[in-house]
Image 1: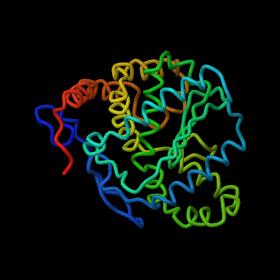
Image 2: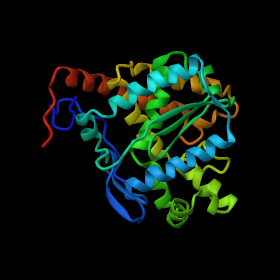
Image 3: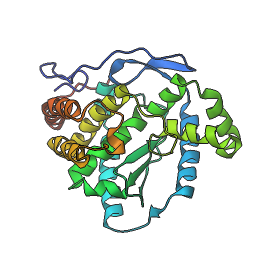
Image 4: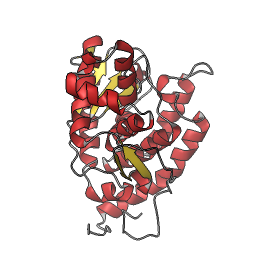
Length: 283
């Protein structure tokens, strides 16, 4: 499996090359697709911190216990894997100049859900532990959420939805300077699941987060096959009724599982190549 210029005998699955709308900063994003971002690195961190404080002021964080310790332990491993330069290169993550102040919290909410805010603020709802059976399945979710931050998906959504002025106003005056509706909509753009007014992630971003997250969990030494088992359990959790919130933005459960199953061998091969030193140095 090539990590950028390793042997091209095995490759990451191709990414869709989709152009996005105009915004202050344009360039190549994950998988070398065109990506426009509304926020600078400094603005991402500041806005993410503000939104995180706003969310925590309205929710009940779980302060201690086995679930909190599990999230912190697994998340630390995923965040460390995100620092692996050949993996960053292969996915073409735009990380230079960006700061990730990782924080992970468990919220006392029964929904099966999680979300991530810019700059690395991740929340997991208590209801998720009814589905995630082990560390590797939790790593599936945390890798997916961390991927959204690494890929700057929130900044991209702000650019697409033309909410740049609201974001800049919030950065300058705080979220309290916005109307309640504009504030909730902005938080919803920053992290789907963080607000009752969340604007859902689009399918392209969700597929990217699945793909990046699968490689992150694998490079953190979690079995990527557990991602397939986790999403199968998520599909079963809907019981033929309303799907858990974390599933609501993606194509059918069957398509998602099939797509992830196709990536598992590539993720294994990539990790084996990296461990064996079959990785081209950075230019």
